[in-house]
Amino acid sequence: MEEVEHPMQMVPLLMREDNKESDDWISEFNQIGRGIVFNRNDDYDPKVVSLGPYHHGKKKLKFVEDYKPKAVKMFIDGGPKIEDEYLNAILENIGYVRSCYLEEFMPSMYTDEDFAIMMLRDACIILSYINVRKEPFKKDAMIKHLGTAVYNSIIRDTYLLENQVPFGILEILVGLRYGTDRHAFVKEMETTFFKRFFHVEEETELEEARGNNIHIDMLGTEPLHLLEIFRKAIVTGHDRDPGSKPGEHRCNINNLVWHLEKSCCCHDDIPVRSEHVFRSVTDLKSKGMDFSASRIKSLRGVRFRPYELCKSAELKLPLLYVTKDTRVFFKNLIAYEFSPYVPNPSDKAVTAYVNFMRLLVISNQDVKELREKQIIINGLGRDEEVVEMYKALDTFGAEDTSFLWGVKMDIEEHYHSKAKTWIADLWTTYLNSPWSTIALFIATFLLCLDIVQTYYAVNPKDSNNGTGGGSAGAHH
Image 1: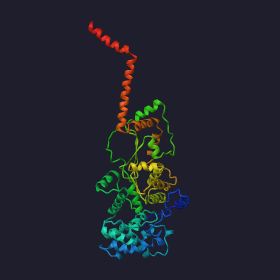
Image 2: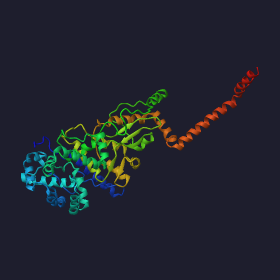
Image 3: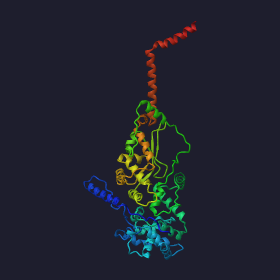
Image 4: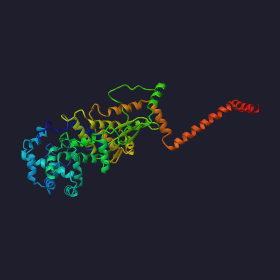
């Protein structure tokens, strides 16, 4: 393998310092009994296992470090090669391996053989955990040796920017053990994480998501590590919602709304500005906006649908399962997008999505609304913990030039449109249920009858003239 041009990055110092300051503030805040504590000291550091040299040798990681030789044996047992053959394959590519890491963080005490052994052990514990061939006994064996708590924490440590093994090494080992080629292995890893993140279980659902959602395909690019694959799997989206059909037309009243605003002189021109004054979910709901889970399984699956006849505006958001590891995952992906020498520096899709959600979710009521619409599945327990999670995700003032810019403009235009607000109030007050619609219809019908009755009571001559004229003509 050729040496890589740009090695794996460390978390920018600014982010680490901000993380520490946030922890100090939370600790002080909690002492007076009014805060929700997240232990964010190790958001960028491994909790149970080191992968690669950046955190190798830490005392708190010794328990899993001692288990790694067993993971090697578990991985190669039953295969066509012995351990020395795997080790020699890594040594043949040791120049590539060393080039994957920053030179200043590579201890000089590592000989090529020491480094190759580290890579073999770290790669095997990843592959044993991922369980490429879905062999149940491997999972059971790992849990037996490590315990459930440690086992469940390994996936969290694979999300860390500074805790990665070169993907090329994983490819080499899988090729030697199973004969799997690179393209198939990349696809398998993307599919595995895609299913994990979006909780896709049925194969038919996965195929639908693939067909309408992604080209889960990195065949033209060599991923440097698993975190790049994780990111790719969740941000590559399709332009069309699979729930709609090409060429489908709906009854849209936007032109009517535009003419109404113009004739009433009530249209507020929204100046073009670089920053949008965003509103929370609760505030947007009060302006008639509805929320639903997007069927596009991608962080790019944010869609805004304007007014349709008898329907309010709708904002579709990707389904998100919030767990104890979600904060760590997003923080490390943001750190990755802010790192130098990433493949596409202008593509900050994760940062843009997180920033968008931070603007929408500012209170427990916002979380409750999204939870009830099954957009957020809260695995943390209390809604306020989700709010605190979003507050902990700093996007460091990144300018939004992303796919969400147009959505933000549409939301701003909707929010400032008085005519649309009136229609939203009409819908919310009178048309949001069959009973209120029936009541409105009956009230309107009775009002019309009352008007007609009042008219003829005030103008009885019109009625008499009509009747008398007809009688006279008949008599003549």
